[in-house]
Amino acid sequence: MSENFELIKYSGAILCKHIADGATIQIAIKTEPVCAEDSGWQFLCGCDVGDDSEGKIWNLKEVIDIEPSLLPYLLCEEECYLVRDSNSKEWKKYNDIDTT
Image 1 (spheres, one colour):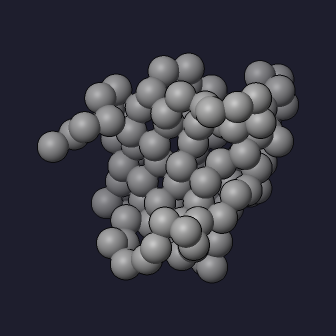
Image 2 (image 1 turned 180 degrees about the vertical axis):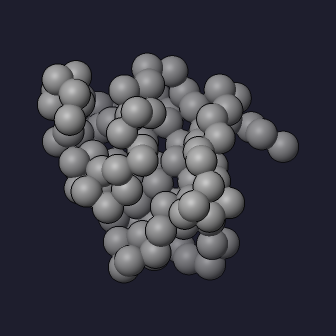
Image 3 (image 1 turned 30 degrees about the vertical axis):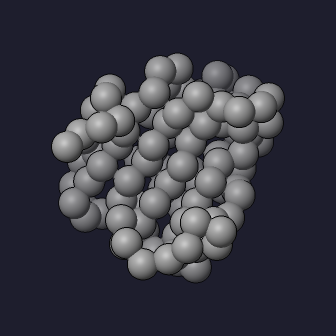
């Protein structure tokens, strides 16, 4: 892992319940952190079923342990939106979170 990642690996990230239960990450959103412990990252499975109150907080190291392909993106300073169609697909990065 990169030296810069070592500085943020214990920062918090929000995961949807489904990812915490074993689903794969299909969407990653980086927004402005709300406090020093917050990475600003949210990781979602892409399923519209669920309740925001069921989200989990993991550190970024735990996220990379289950999805190492995200490592090159986690040091991103600006807001961004990453999406992929399936586990075998490459991440597509958008600098505008509103991709509609």
